[in-house]
Amino acid sequence: MASKARIQTVKADFLDPSLYDDTGLSGLPRISRGTLLAPLSRAFDLAEGRKPGHAQRVAYIGVYLANELGLDAARIEEVFFGCLLHDAGMAAVPAAPRVDTARGTRLIAGNASTRDVLAAVPTGGWADVLEALTQHCEHGARIARKLGLGETVARAVAHHHDCWDGSGLPGSQAGDRMPLVSRIVAVADRVESMIDAEGSPLMVRRRGPALVLEMAGSELDPEIAQRMAALAGKDEFWLGFYDNDLPATLMSLNYGGIMNRDELFEFIGALSDVVDGRNGRETGRGRRVAEAARRVALTCDMTERRADLVQVAALLQDIGTLGVSSHVLSKPDILTIDEMAIVQLHPIYARDILSEVPGLGAAAWWVGCHHERIDGKGYPGMLEGDEVPAEAQIIGMCEAFDALTSDRPYRRAMSSADAIEVMRGLAGTRFDPYLFERFESSLATFSAA
Ligand SMILES: [Fe+2]
Ligand SMILES: [Fe+2]
Ligand SMILES: [Fe+2]
Image (cartoon, rainbow, N blue to C red; front, side):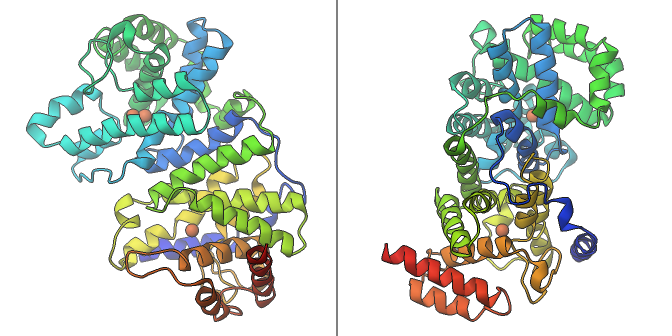
């Protein structure tokens, strides 16, 4: 794993920040909920341990199927969001079960059917897997509500593991009582899981229709399963998986409406709350740090528009921690070298995910650098001096100050004065002294107000 850390360093050496700076000095992108959520859904794939793009491929299948079923435009949008978020709750499962056998991993990753899990529980001791399955449905529904995507989407997420014949998770619905959108999500999820398991859409093209029909009337709504089997006979449907720009196709649907400034901050703030939960922090901490980062950016004479982007980057700085096991994130002891190497991947995950969002290229770069230090001892790129963007340092300073002034399991919160003193000792090594001076002045102005 130590070698992994070295690989990241080499990778960062040839990364060109200008590739990310697609926004220059422009401000917040005018963007729809769907355009933002399609790339960010990859963070939920990470939390679940799935191959990147699982949620996106489920959304592609779900929307295609919804069109085939002749649903109206509003319902198709709900299918889209239900698919993108169906496993989002995995990010909030407090202690996702850790099972090392091939079968256990397969069950957790959702490649198996709900019936497989239920059948395994009495004999294989998969009660914790069952618990995680149940919890991720509930948590996912809560996340959908917090994102303001409506009750239909939330219910679709809550019931996506229900079975048509009533043999699903405890408390699940059956038959027509299963929400229609959840029935479509369930079919799309099973088909994508087959692709995941087979490793190639072409393999599923051959065997998939029969497998879907096998589940018709038991796990899956028979009518929707029939439609899916018919759809699976079309080359055009399968060719979509080989479109290198499947994410761009999903983003271009522009579902969910263009967000205004307040809506954008609320949407991203809700995602930040999920990250807080994942890291065992109080809800709202990410929002607080991001507001502080905005104030410091303004104190550094950045424009309002650039300060807005700094706030967005700060809100999403730790979205990559969804890719770090909750066991590592909540470990009370000192991390091993291997665990440290895993934690140090989180800025890379975040940078790669955010760089896919139109208009957030610069923010992606800052987020990727929020653990760099000007003395070159940071991670993942060991950048030095001016190579570390001021915006990344501002985010890092606000994060550090908030961490020092918050209670930790192993120490009480420091006073602001003590925290500033500790950080002053890092000016010139971790942070640029001028930026630190601006940070202090922003803090003084804010405290006085
Ligand atoms: Fe699921
Ligand atoms: Fe899934
Ligand atoms: Fe971080």
